[in-house]
Amino acid sequence: MTKVAIYPGTFDPITFGHIDVIKKSLKLFEKIVVAVSDGENKEYLFEVNERIEIVKKALFSDLKLNRNKITVISFTSLTTDLCKKYKSSIILRGLRAVSDFEYEFQLAGMNRKLNNNIETIFLMSDVENQIISSKFVKEIVKLGGNINKFTTKSTIKSLKKKYE
Image (cartoon, rainbow, N blue to C red):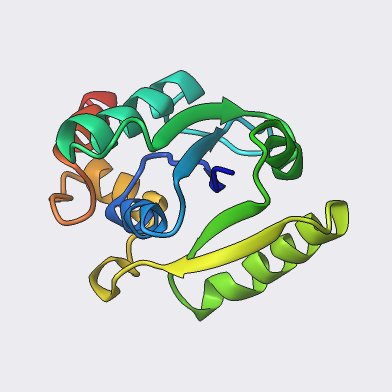
């Protein structure tokens, strides 16, 4: 049986922190579903289809990761329903700092209550990427700063185009 893990997030935009989690998870699972959220409770810089394209360019064009091991999709459902659809019992979540833990712990608990067959696995990005957040990346580029250390070339291009 193929071990599939679901990695949900907004990816608005994808950063090296997200990419660290994806790379690490590829060592643990046969297939990763990068699930780009299109929930209504958030304001996004990029529309969901733009975010999917940005993620695909970052992973497959910039980084040349294996397309056969990663699927990029959008979703509006519960993550637990997504797990059912892709026959996965694993939700991946990235942790940057202790401040992330409380929210992620509650989210994992709620997902577990919704489906007790689902486990949440927390992965930390490398130390140099733990401070990166999509929010800060957007703010830095908006103010004309250099974000080369935070995300891929194609993502930077998309961000700069958005703020022109």
